[in-house]
Length: 343
Image 1 (cartoon, one colour):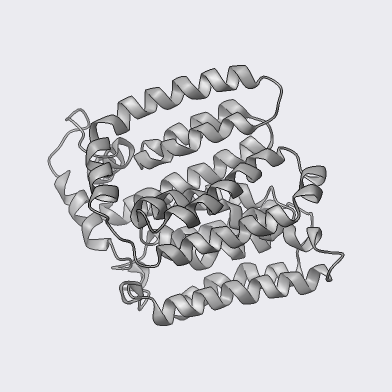
Image 2: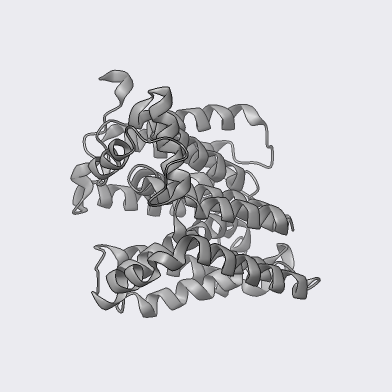
């Protein structure tokens, strides 16, 4: 399991030793390539490995113009990789690249970018990017979209979230967040978000909405560990709410994260009602952990030195990685880590 610790250690040590406001691209490009290779060239790693292999094989012999069953972006990517003969590794490589680019773009906009990236490794990189391929692409595009939304670029946000919907239809739930950008122009955003949400829902979700409701709610589909993952978002949300007065004075577009925090709190209440559905939703709220903990050393500077806060955050997420690798029910599907380059 040492490759997972290596992936965590690189940004963690950078957060401890070189964290500053400099945004030179060199180290980030190297980090992005490393993570893209780890994600993209993994070999029989992840709980859904064989399911994604079957999805790839289902596209054999099909043309780009054939009818599409499933998430259109992911299906078309599979057909492209079949045409190029890159196999499932080409699919995973492109998906890993999109996820890593989105996460990197988001982290580089933060107060402590290396700390934010380290926070993402134990769950979002290790479990999601190496296990839930389609949803990891959607999450990577949402990270990218949130980086634009923080800069006030509403159009960029909706375009990227719309692209995320092509890879996992549940990403449509993030469109309404664009309404909370800033007070000016709220009526235009309200109308635009309403129309876009309706359009995306009709195009990608409506046909399967009855099946999703039946599977996730009526049949009470359960996700092991959902309570823990929801709780991780909840703790970050509480930290934001505790420092809310200071947060909204320092950081622009604070309402974005305020409403995401309220959603994270609501998930704690609802997770026992439909754990799988809430687990899927809470994944899109996970950027809250990255942004809150990257800013917490500054927000809590009057209570303790920023370096101490950084150390505690890294210790906490190192513990998350340790517990998951050693005690999680499905961790065996990630162990040992294998890479096609060394097979």
